[in-house]
Image (cartoon, rainbow, N blue to C red; front, side, top):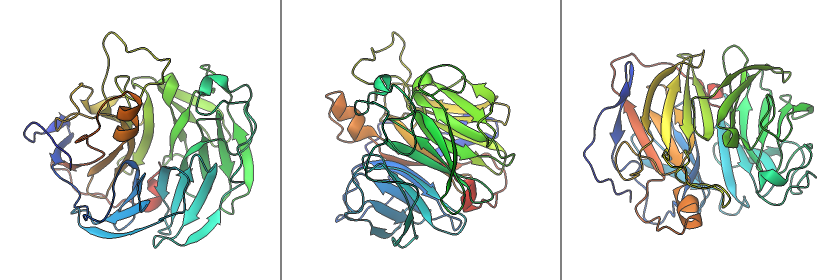
Length: 349
């Protein structure tokens, strides 16, 4: 169970203020929720969690009540998840080099693109510095964004440096990107969403920026007021929610601790990249306003925010005890704005 060491408080600024929900959700004793590596929200506001435990997919009501679970032996290592407008889920299995579509009940509908064998980028495992050339799908893919026409955009990933564009039938149309820190290049393209204007927003994690493209891969804009963003989510309010890993935790072995580290945090931006609200960034993850290692983010029709954290993996890599660290958090919108009618294809992970 999450152990938080301070009272609840209102977080954020302006119209985008939130209150943390303590001890959300209610996980049955027989369910082993190790790490909420992915989180998404369906059109009915049910919350789907990609778990690095067993079973792999957990389903909750917005209240936190447990609904069901599935996916006992379907994935090598869960990573990202995205709810589609038809109620299905797109799941990325990074070590399985796989993107798969499942029904909400856990029936495999199809695999998108090739799977099971890494594309040849010369990458040595998860070390993005060793990628010599970008390649086709997939090498440790991370997440999926869904366009209004059902087209799929896949960030690929830890062992590649590309975005792959598939049509709604799963045919590969194009790929773009290359390893590096220049405009249009990637160092761990990790999260992705498509907004109402059709723009493709990519969380370019190790370059600490959001890169924005049109659907042909032309770079339109860069947002840099982020620290190692893992995911970006567009809502019908035309605002953008970003889960930032920060540089305190979850660092690669070759990355030194900065002199003034930033902890995990949530940031909210307008469509031009102006900051609207932010909380977190401190170093005490057990506070209601603290995060250890934000990894995924989703927003429901009432503007409630759900954050999945990669706390266990990050803590163990650092030789720290992950006991009591949060891995799944809910924040309720308290600023008095009316609810929105979000559709599932507006959830991109």
